[in-house]
Image (cartoon, rainbow, N blue to C red; front, side, top):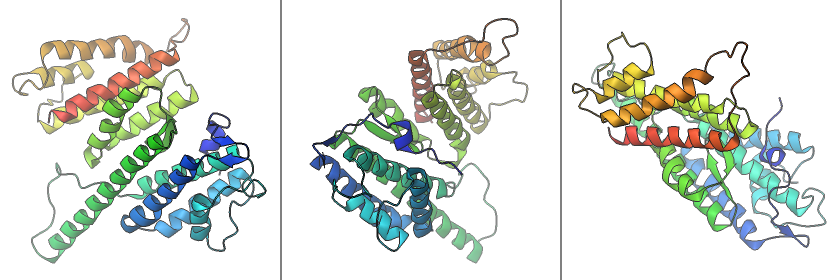
Length: 322
C-alpha cells in the first residue's frame, strides 16, 4: 500500500541543510520530538510498539532504503530521530533528505497514534448498565480513554510549539504537517478548533474538516464543500443536543433558524443566522450540485483558504457558546 509521506508532498520546500550540515535548531527539534513520542505518548498509547514498527516500515518502503542500522524497529525509529546528521552516511542522504525523512516519520507517528485512540465517551448518550463492577470498570475505562486523549492533545500542542521555536513553518493539524500561511489564523482559529472538537459527538465534524484540508492540499477545487459539510454537521448536532430539531427541517437554513429561535435560547442572533445562510446559499448550494451544461464551478486557492478558515471560525464560535 502506498503511503503519502511529508517528503513526497514537500520535496524541496524546506532548506534547513547547509554546507553538508543540519542546522542545530533542527537537530534539537528532532530530539525533542523523540522525547514527546517515546517518553510522553508511549505512556498513554495502547500498542505503541506496534505503531512505531508499522509507521517506520511504511516510511522505509517509500524512501526505498532503511534509515537506521539498529536491530529493533523501535530502536531504529528512536535512533533515526536522535542521531546526528552524517554527510557520508548512505542512510542519511543529503541534508535536505535527512530533514524531510524525519519530518515524515514524526508526521506518520503522530497521525497513527491519533487514529489509534478510541473515541472519547459521549456524554449525551444514556448510561447503560447497573451500579456495580461493570459500571466501575466502565468509568475506569473512560478515565483512561480521556487521559489518552488529553495526553495526545498535549503532545500535539508541544510539537507545534517546538516546530515554531525551530523555525519550521509547519504545524501538525489533523494527521498532517501543514504549511502555516497565516500565523494568527493558525493560532487563533485552527489550533483552538481542533481542541474544541476533540470529543466523540463531534467526530463527523472532524472527519469532514480533515477531508477539506486533504482536498485543499491536493488542490481539489471542491475542498470548501467538505468544510461547509463540517459546519452544517456542527449546526445539526447542536440543534439535536438542545432538542430543537423537529424532523421537518428541509436543509441547513431550518437548522440555523432553530439556533436563532427563542426556544433555542437564541444561541445566535438573527444577523448571525443571516450570515450563516448566506454562506450556504452562495458557497454550498451552487457548488454542491451538478453544473449541467454550465462550466463546473471553481475556487481559487485564496477562496479555498477563506471558506475553510471561515467554517472553522464558525464551528469554534458555535461550540464555544455551549
